[in-house]
Image (cartoon, rainbow, N blue to C red; front, side, top):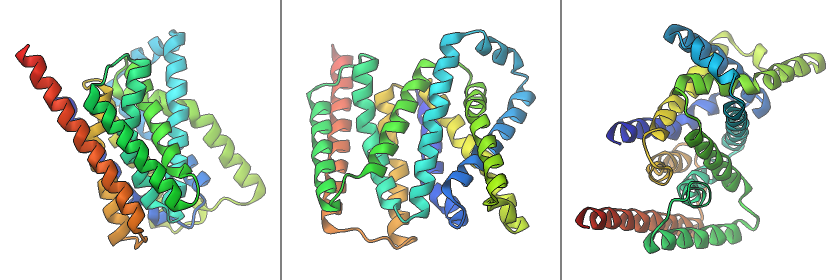
Length: 292
C-alpha cells in the first residue's frame, strides 16, 4: 500500500506539470501531437521492455484473448484522453482540464461500485452527491455542458478500471497499449504527408527533439500509475489524484492567466468539500474496521 501510494503521488505530480510541456507545441495541431506522442512512447517502451527482457510476457499476452481485449480497450481510452487533454491545454481550457481530474476520483468510486463491487459508506455517497451538485453549478455558469472536463474524467476513469483488470507488468502493459494505437498514429502520419499538412517535421531542431521526448514524458507517469493501480483500491487511487488538478489549477491562473469566475470557484470549493468528506468517511470506516 505504501509503495503504491508513493508511485501514485509521483505520477500525479508529473501529470500536474504536464501542461507546461504541451504548451511548447501550441502551434502544432492536437491530433499531430498525439500521433507523435503515441509513436515515441511505443519506441521508448520498446527499448524499456527489451532492456528488461520481457519478450516472454509479450508472447503470453498474444495468446490470451481476454488480456488482448483489455489492453486494446485501455490503449484506446488513454489515446482519447491524451487527445482531449492536448487540445484543451493548447486552446486555453486548462481550468476545465483541472476540473475534469478533480471529478475523476468521484467517478472512480462509482466505477468501483458498479464494476468491482466496492461498497461506499454514507459519507462517501454524500461526497459523490456534493460533487454532482458542483458539476451542475459549473455547467450552469459555463452556459454549456463542460464536455472537456467530463470527457477527461470518464476516459481516465475507465482507463483506471481497465488497468485494475489487467494482471501484467506495468512496462509490458504500457508497451502493449501503445502498440494497439500505433497503426492509427502511423496512418495519420501518412495522411498528413499526402495532404501536405505535416507541421511537426518543420519545427526547429531543438523543439523537434523536445517533441521526441514526448515518449518519455508520456510513459514515466503512466508506469508509476500502473504500479500504483496494482497496489491500491480504485477508490483510494482516485482520491490521491487531487494533487494533479491542484497543480493544473494553479498553473492555469498564475502562469496561463486564465480567468476563473466566482461561480467556478464555488464549484471547485464544493469539489474540495466532497474530497474532504470522502477522506474523513474513509478514515472513520478504517478505524471502525480495526476496532471491530
